[in-house]
Length: 404
Ligand SMILES: Cc1ncc(COP(=O)(O)O)c(C=O)c1O
Image (cartoon, rainbow, N blue to C red):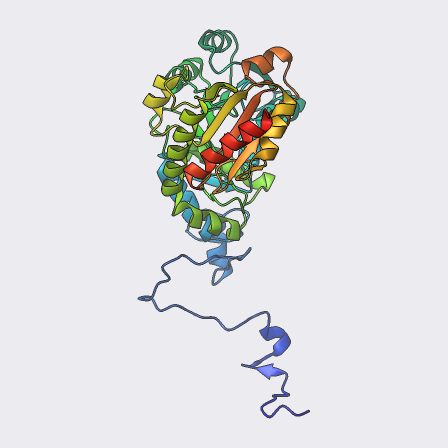
């Protein structure tokens, strides 16, 4: 068979084709012609015209990019956006929410330091305090986020490097008193680190929190298809952490950063809509006879409703409750749900459920489980973007099925 225009030459544009595939034709955009969506800089490496400019960059004397583990234009756009939304100067992106917690704790602590943490905090945060930091001689104390006296007692008696907390907490949506906690920490000379994933980037920025952490896997990306994390703080603090975090190597991939940036376009719409649905659902669940208590900060019955109202512009998308019966009822309830998938994570467009058996906390003592309100009846819902009436009907039929 003959190909009429087949070019047998191995050369093209002055180079061998084997060279050409590694130096493809460049396509420049004219200066007055811009792409409306920023391109994905899916490149590990960047180059300057000569070694003098490269050396200048490496000395920090000129702007630019060199290696994507340290910085990349696609990541930079997202860093600037998230820092602005959270009301701080700088942001470091990493590959997951857990990476943001681990990198931050490792960077800010040294041997002999003490950290104040909370019984109600995210499981892997407790693990990091108990196991990883413990291995390097960092001590910690866990108290309840509601126990103001214990917070004051620990901070008053023990020199403390960090106070690491969340608000609302996972899974039963307790609210940290940010004014009290930040004032106590400042008085004691401790830095505050708030995992602000549940409250979102637009909440809590007006409180003097030193470091905000976010899992971008949740509301930022919003669609359950990409992992990411962010450390957001003042410029000086981020500069003091930058080399440590980069050297640990938990980089976010540019394509993941692009997807998260795309998710951020609908962040407010999704978050507000999911919060409104969560409030409606919480109110309905509160009328159900088989539910002993509903934990949602937007309900007047929530013990910290006034605090939540003062601190946040909405009340979050997580609704937890205490179901009658035990693990078997929780399993039957979760199994009967049609629109809530049994899965970890929160903040996606689809609704999720975690039945009591799967809510974890194996490291907690019986007393601590009581403080965290983890019982054989605790169920966590993450509210998605389905029609709210469909979700309520689904929850009602699953309750009926669980107790049939
Ligand atoms: C409060 C909180 N922080 C951090 C994370 C961890 O995020 P990632 O899954 O992105 O590591 C989670 C995940 O569920 C979370 O709920």
